Image (cartoon, rainbow, N blue to C red; front, side, top):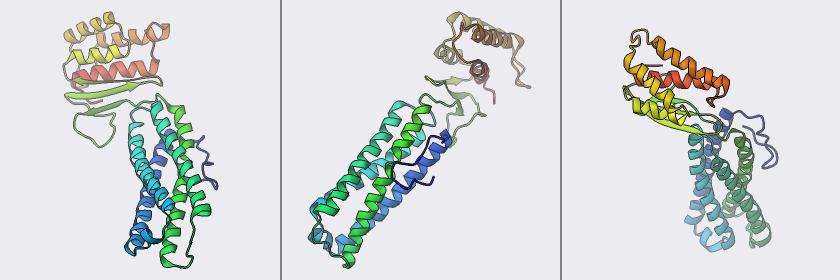
Amino acid sequence: MAKGLVGGMTDYSHQSFNDIITDLQKEQTTVTDFINGISANIEKVKASGYWDKKVSSDFAQIIGYSLKHFKTTNEELSEIAQEIQIEVREHHCKRLERIATVADEINSSIGTIWHQRYNGKEYGNPDFVLVEDIYGDTRDMAVNLLDISNIASRLKDFIGKTKIIMEKNQNLGGISHTTFGDNATIIVGDHNQVKTIQIKQGNFDDLSDLLKRNNVSDEDISELKNIVENETPDTEKKTLGSKTNGWISKMVGKCLDGSWAIGIGAAGKLLADGIKAYYGWHI
């Protein structure tokens, strides 16, 4: 998205979760471009010998430190953009805030060094023109990263956000809600926690584990076990048996009276999808 006129002033309060992911990915691309541009100019100035002979040591050090931070930021943004699509945790926000904090320190330090401590500026010298570009790009990148703190602030609103992921063991290159096989992974969560379990076709222990993680009582799990072991579902139409559906309805009813602490919408999908995964059905 377009940046504000002043670093750190971009408003992210209206951003959706998907907007945040997109912005993190765009920010990573921007950081990569700046790293490549700054590094290329440094190599040019070093090749002529100007960097080692004429460039202020303080300036060279802050540039080296800045590049290290930018490279770390590149890795962090890539990891965070991927990880929050599974679950948003507090440490993701803290890591983004740290990126902005260090960028703010760089912005302040490089400005002081350039304007107050860098002596012998050779304006008009082709090599010094490149040094000026290095300074400008490094400071611009630091200022650009100040907005990361605002992304972190907005991301806090999504802490605990998870996605229901149902996919085969092989890498599908993304998240799928439609594919089940003889081995499925289900990640289920609400705004407070995340639960993850693999369900192998016909393995009730896996299904039991999923239900236990979602606070289904042992008594209710035992009842379901007896039902699925003795009731035959319609495999052609992929419909559950009447007793299985009756059990699901009973559990949803427990949401209404408060005896099962889970949202009604989440409950029905969790139970139905879990049981269908047990049967190895496509959803």
